[in-house]
Structure formats: structure tokens, C-alpha cells
Length: 332
Image 1 (cartoon, one colour):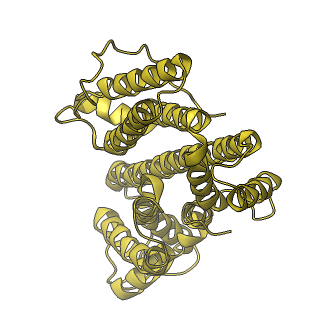
Image 2 (cartoon, one colour; image 1 turned 30 degrees about the horizontal axis):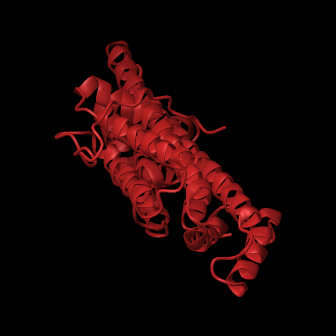
């Protein structure tokens, strides 16, 4: 269910215009500010061009106050709070939920002449989240076709208005879900990256502790290095293998913020780069028990191979990220 933001509207003097964006506001709030400003001006035009009843005019003023309050909630934050906002994004997602509610309400208040245009916009964006044979989408398409074929304005707009609001509501819900899933996947990939780095660090620490006792994590013979230098070489070679396997995946991902909410390709690349050294160290430690490692070239080649093998572990995240990117790009 979409998270909604409960705000106490600020008391603004009518006619003062939309408040400016506070300086040094978090960058993620810019899209919210732009959208809130567009909705504010839409409500202002509706109240000016078609005053209508006192109830409708009062509700439009109430909407304008709530939008102004939303922007007033934006303020510069310190680094620690900025990181919490980046991780959870709850205020941002709640603000988007509020803007979506207002957009649906404005459709309910718009005039009959503008309703056809609003229905067309809803019909244009809905296929990104709804199947072509969705009953709500088909119903709105039929109602819009009848309205366009009738006189202007259409004689009965009640069903068209209800169908437009219904499609907008389900589209907004799907959009909010997309961004919540993207944020959750980003956080999981970041957590897995940190765990991978921690595991490699534990391996280095264990080798430092074991080396005075004459024990090594990866047993080598001949001219191959051993101990901490060997682990560093294996981790570096595993990183190279991770880069090699990550390039095709990264190149195939669609670009742009809108198609990659929360910069998922960046998190995918980070996960692969962190997992490569781990799989290389773990793989060499297992192989060395049965296969003698006699020279540096053999160690490097095997480490690169095991670093490339991290793709077998990260492909699940790649598949989920590709699904979310396809949804954001409007692919069925």
C-alpha cells in the first residue's frame, strides 16, 4: 500500500505564489519540488479560470496550501541524516504518495472540457504499469472514445472521470511499488557488497594471525608467493575477473535516472567488484588443497577465473534489476 504523508498545511497569504526551493536542499527533493509546483499552478489555474462553487474553490485553495506545506518541509540536512534519508527514503516516498493523491483529486475537480485531456494523459502513461487487456484500461479507452465522438463538452462525464481516477490510482500505486522495490534491492545489494568486503578483510586478518605459526590459507609451492602478498595478489586478480564479467551486464542495462531508479547499475557493479575478490580467495583456498600452485602465473589465472565466477552469485540481483529496469522503461 502506498505510504501517504500527513501534513498540517502552512498558513500562506493568498496570492503570494509558490514558495521557492530552499537552498542546499537534498537533490532527491528536486523532482518533488518541480512536480508540486506544477500541481500548484494547475490548481491555481483551475480556481481562476473556472471558479465554480465555493466548495470547489475552497478545496483548490486547500490543495495549494498542502503543496506549499510539502515544499516548506524541505530543508538542508546534515550528513548523518542525509545518509538515513538516502537509505530509507521514507519522507520522499511519502511525499510522492501525497502528490499522487492530489493529482487524482485535481482530476475530480477539473472542468468537463479539460477532463478529456486529463483522461488522455492517464491513458498514455498507464500501459507502462498495466497490461494492454486490463479491464480498467479498456474501460477508460472506451469511455474516452465515446467522449471524443460526442459534443464538446461531453454530455455525461461522470463515468469518464471515475475511470480516469481509477486508472491514475492503480498507475500511481504501481509506480510507488516500483521505486520501493528498487530501493529495497539497492539496499540489499549494498549490504551484500559490504559483507563481501568484510569477508575478504577477515581472510587477511586470519592470514596475519596464522602466518607466525607457519600456516597459510592458500598453500603454494615453487616460485609462487605465499602469505599476505599471495592474498593481495589473488584479491587483485579476482577484482580483474569481476570487471571482465561485469562489463557485458553493465553495457546491456538501459541508462538514465528514470529507467534505473536508485542507480541500480551502479550498485550492481559495486556488488560484482566486491564479490570478485571474495570468490577468488575462497576458490583458490579450496583448489589449493588438491591442485599444487607452483608459480605466479598459475595463481593469477586461477584467481581471475574465480573472480569471473562471481557472476553465478550475483546473477539473481542482475535478473531482478533487469526486471525493474524493464518496468521503468515501459516494457511488457
